[in-house]
Image (cartoon, rainbow, N blue to C red; front, side, top):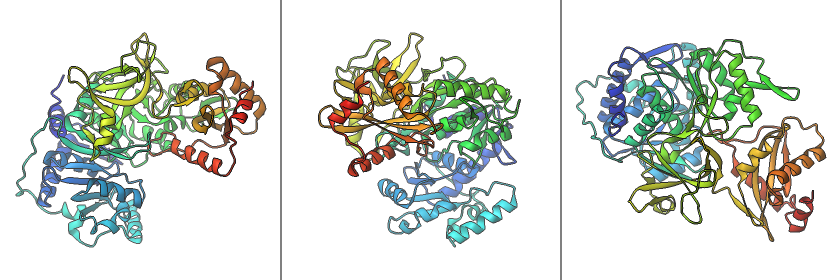
Length: 573
């Protein structure tokens, strides 16, 4: 095992020393070697140091996946700044809240996001450096068109001292700087979370934590120098994207940067970049298939042999229907890929990856095994004792990648961090899992999503996975509706492939399936149908809060009768 107790940059540099002539980054038609990348990072360090950035300074980054963003992140790591990842997809109010929470000294941002925070620059007392996400592209037509658009939208600053491209024209060779020393579990990054629980929080993370994730991923994937990894997952503000970037560069792979991160772009970008490995949410991989009659087949736009260089395909976010996963694997095979779609489980609080199913050595339907640098245990939430294999338990993990805490939020930190009798530090991830006889883990559901109906604890994800076995159902999310007698009753939000169906027959089959596998407390109090895919968040997960808000509006408008009498009638089979 390599020494993870280094800064992120030093850990990466140690792995790169013998591979400086290989391509580190590609962007459009441009190829950037490891030697060039490290030279650029060095210049960025001197530039930032000349601008007054020092160890411990809080520096905000609002980035897209471009070479400049990579240089900035590692340059700030060398200096020892605390990097805060702001999402380029947020609106003004959300951006303002994050800036107010973290109080940066400086914000370095792609210029197209400047309008999100320029009104707060003086009031919140931070300086700004802007850069274009297309600066490293060779296509002059794209550059000119983009610049005109940003001028029209007011996303610019007149001062050249606030423009990264202008600043880079200067010579900084005489600027001396101080490299920050490695600090065990020292604060280096703040990324935001809260999508699953609804509580928005900043997560404090360390250098050695991310290094340990790379080491752990190496125990599951066989990365070789020179392999190409698609760089589509945003890494400026997402722990998952940052971990994939660091993993690829520390394994001397080519990280094929792209600004095209939508599900519909995945196939074309894998083909264009000749990627050997790619990751995405369920919608990304579902884009490879289409419905033909009552079954799924490879999308008509796929070409035989077009993905022959793709060896690893990994999904994340949530469960997929078995039939959907099988169809995706058939699509990969049709395109000449030997990849089998894998899965995983991660959290911002652990620098993303905790468990990985690489698709080839693990069983379908599981989240695989824990990465080697993490300890895991499944605990009964009532007794605090570990459960037996095959029983549902609440996931606790321990290891270097566990967060330092929630930023300026000790109350929320204390809710999830605990110490065992030996003083070992554990975090409650809030997910229920089950360990299989093969030593792999199956995902059951979120603790925060569970609710009581009658005498049962309802696990929405378990119910959703069951409902996904019904062919007509594309997606489903289960939400709780309050009830005066049984506490809560389930409401099913179902996305259908085709709405021209016999709904009575469908609901009879739904009820029969639920009663055969679970019991009447899991039956729906009401069902809402949709003819489109369910609403999703930026991380590709279904936006459960959105459907809870729909429930509340429906209750207020008396569109849902949530009386126990109606519930009991609906539960009659």
